[in-house]
Amino acid sequence: MISLTDVSYAYPDAEALTLEHVDLEVERGSIAGIVGASGAGKTTLAKIIAGFIPHADGGELSGTVRVDGRDLSTGSLVDAVSVVGLVIQNPFNQISGAKYTVREEIAFGLENFGTPRDEMQRRVDEVAALLRIEHLLDRSPYALSGGQQQLVAIASMIVLRTPVIVMDEPTAQLDPAGTRMVFDVLSALRETGITIVIFEHKLELLQQHADRLHVVADRSIVLSGAPDDVLADDRLAQWAVGTTRYVTAGRLARERGLLPPEVPLPVSFEQAERVFDRERSVR
Amino acid sequence: MTSTLYLDRRSPVHRLNPVTKLVAMLTIVVIVFAVPLWWVAGLIVVGVVVPAAVVAHCGGRLLSLSLKLLLPIIVVLVLVQGLTFPGGKTVLAEWGVLALTTEGLLFALGIGSRIVCLVLTSVLFVLTTHPGDLMGALTERGMSPKFSYIISSTLQLIPAFRDRADGILLAQQARGLAVKGSPLARVKVMMPLLGPLVLGMFTDVEERSTAMEARGFGSAARRTALIPVPDSTAQRVSRWLMLVLAVAAIVVPIVFGVL
Ligand SMILES: Nc1ncnc2c1ncn2[C@@H]1O[C@H](COP(=O)(O)OP(=O)(O)OP(=O)(O)O)[C@@H](O)[C@H]1O
Ligand SMILES: [Mg+2]
Image 1 (cartoon, helix red, strand yellow):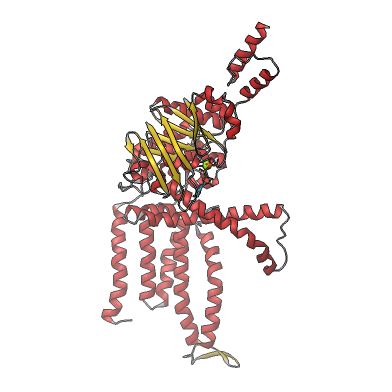
Image 2 (cartoon, chains in turn yellow, brown; image 1 turned 60 degrees about the vertical axis):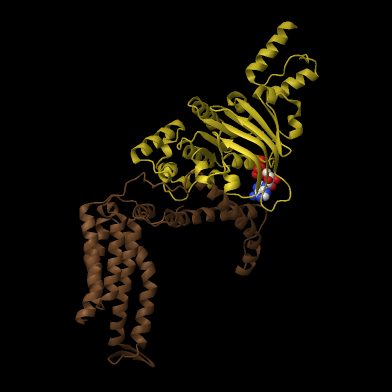
């Protein structure tokens, strides 16, 4: 569905490349989690996948970016945004400023694409129920907390039903319950065939929901794989990406001789429970 | 939070199509300027604006806001024109070089009644018409969505940015910045705050335009609206009638030279 081959990019007037030789494959109807330290280039990569680079931001982009079989660098930004939805990092800036209620704010994109009114109403209600923000529909988008704004920003993108949704740290301001709900919604969307790319620091949720994980570091994607394999990789620390507490606990147990080196490190709570139960019964 | 004066009330005036209200306001502006008779403006206030304000449950607010705007203007007008009108002959009272004349007062009345009428009309319009509805109605009539976006977002973003400036100021105060003393001293301590604020605004503008594009703002599709703009045949007819009235107010005095 998404295929980046040997992509390199430098911002306008920048001396060095921000991304270099990036390869990325994301299957249709899957959730790809992308992790990386601050400043690693996550937002830049998100904008490349969504077509904003090079259409809106300029700069030097090389390599090929294909989404849904199309080369995004040919064609216009409007073509790109009808295929890929982008939830930007700062929800305050995602709010249009043109609308006075959350209901109209969510419908803003649908209005721009000329969706008929009754369909618009149905879709707004549906999305609001999905993200449990019905009680906010008549409020001003500016009278919301950061987390509520984040939910509205997510709602205003998924209401567009683009085949691909790219989200740049969409749960940064949400509480744990809100974060879990967003991930559950994303999993439900995946079941409908939508492809999701999520840039996120919450590794335990990525482990539960993502089909694959990719690590951005040293200006490229340095590691791709199944979440369990990626999270147990020893090099994560060197890329300033953490891992789950279960992996950390597993490593400590190994150091203290409580876990033999041939037993794979547990990545989730369930795995840790299983591994340590087994070790206890062996002893 | 938002910088609109709109009063959310359920009233027939609020329910009118915003364009009808806009046309009514413009018609009043034209009539008041084209017909140089002070009592015409008075008649409009008594016969149109005040009843509309009562129906709209906005009378109190209209009065208090308009008084704030009008009082200084009226006082200055009466003093300056009443006392120093050059063509003043009929002296009512005299203090040295200053003379209160009937001609001066009549002139002040002519100007003042128009100003009162215009201020009351436009304040009532703003009180009963939500800017979002007005922009929606105008966009539906072919106004550029970009233009309407600029207006609406300015109305909402200015208060949002003001909040941010307050936030930055608060953060600096928490770090020991003193915002006391003479205005000059205060300006001095505020200078360093401008940097983060302005820089923040620039990155915001860039991000914001990205977010807008992502939601199809650049799309060439014919836009639809979630909330329909109410309209009726009666309103359509009255808009045309008001237009005729406005044209008549301009043409009749010229052609017949009656006034
Ligand atoms: N508009 C720009 N012009 C020049 N350089 C930029 C621009 N935007 C970002 N950069 C640089 O590109 C690099 C990657 O930035 P990016 O915003 O993609 O990082 P990120 O991984 O999203 O970080 P964070 O986790 O803090 O959001 C950084 O070194 C940054 O300084
Ligand atoms: Mg970022």
